[in-house]
Length: 370
Image (cartoon, rainbow, N blue to C red):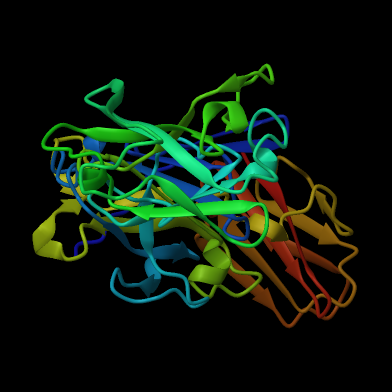
């Protein structure tokens, strides 16, 4: 696998730095996250390279590493392995949120999968209407090619496969039914994106269960399903835990590519400027939890030309200088005084980070080279 470097566009403004740019096919929440934050990485397969290479994938796996101290593809987690914390590198399809009163197993399922739908009667609308019900029946249909309530199965009828739409009581406030949507609704063709349903206690007059809308009124449930055309996938993880990154490391990016469970089944990469496929480089805040708004040491002048003075560094055992993308530029060891003068004449103009290490902590801040 060829490894690529990436040029960060950086500007220094009011004591902060901005790192750009995120690949078009990828978003990260929260923005400007560090390797020590929990992040959600989302891939839009329609914008990955080759075009729509993963568009119809049944599964998407991430093959990845991180850029530590400027070294790309460090601490690799293979697509067919587990992270250091035991987490799978599998992405899940992004669909609509489940209603509060509904849970579904598996959470990300297609119309061809066996699913279990569970209703919590305490959370349905109107409040408590089905809480003491002797039985609960599902009145439902599916959204096919955008048309809701298609192929309706009435609460007092049978599914296309002869299955009764009756839920089983779980011994608390919840009721469940297990079915295969394609078989239950007799779906022959079309894109099925949701199950539309309401519930009753065996008759409409005995109690009804619906969803709450934003104004608190009762509305039909819509349970989202994945499809073979699902193109948006996400994974939530903490890079430092997933890749086994030691505290104090300067991590500036995630390096990754994606596949459909194996390389021959479909691959997703980034586009370079010429339209060719290249590895994704997803920028992270390079300093992470080591950067402090205030530090105990004093540093001047800032901006600096040739000599940077760092003082009040009692008990420091090492000083390191990093570029804005996390490359270590220099290291000062064997510090015997609380004041050090650092020659910066060989540095190019720009923004740099300086980290002062002692036994208790690492303190990092920025300086500008004129």
